Length: 126
Image (cartoon, rainbow, N blue to C red; front, side):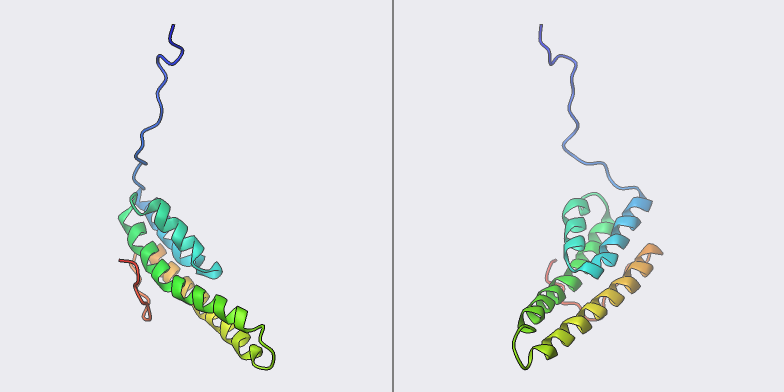
């Protein structure tokens, strides 16, 4: 007797997000700016095919946070230089504050169901 008879696996396609879940994940992708580009990248990769608002907003958040995260990490490394390192340390902190506050503003707008566009965004990912 076949032991696998009657057993079924799950479907390969994930279920689409409900409108509330779509808005929630889109909002979290913006709020993730607090710790850099990784949260928006994770949301974009996992949920972009499941909700249109999440795909749009996580891509916008990723386009905003990715270049800033790279520049910020470079500033942290350059902050180790003697004599002028303090300038890069201050620049890295200012970039983090800008990225965090911009992400909070975007997340608040996104939570209200409004799409948000950052004023200074490279939009590297299309």
